Image (cartoon, rainbow, N blue to C red):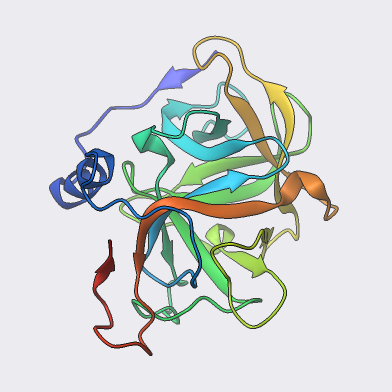
Length: 221
């Protein structure tokens, strides 16, 4: 059985950001050239299964019982926005390009929980469960993911992998779909091997301009 969370109100600043992204012509950046930078808010698209990384205030009914993470086909769901952040010790100043091989946290904008994995089995495929964990962006060392890409920095037009620092699995989708209450959403899990199921691309969002450019720190519209 699945369980719904407390449904606390999103923080006003984050809710305002998502609303701005959803308003037509309101400044939502589309996919394009450039670098993904620290502090950017974006959606992540699995290129093999064509779903966006998603979470919501619904907890797993098995395994850890933490907030579930899924993949959705819809491109306009506000629950698919994630913020790029550094570890608890910092290391990812706003506007700085994310390096290939850098460890980051992916914080779910509307619930404030971090993308997380641990040694629980996922409900459908029996791979490693991926959840959202923590409060107000603060969780633990199992929230860190290394960006695996070629070259020096994470480029917006390039597909990348996310490898978990603590357990070495790759963030993946293999096509299994849930029934009620999240019917049609895809299971997201961790896999031990690097393959086509764990390739992700930056999609819709607000990308902070790289700090090496003029007007550093301003949102790119």
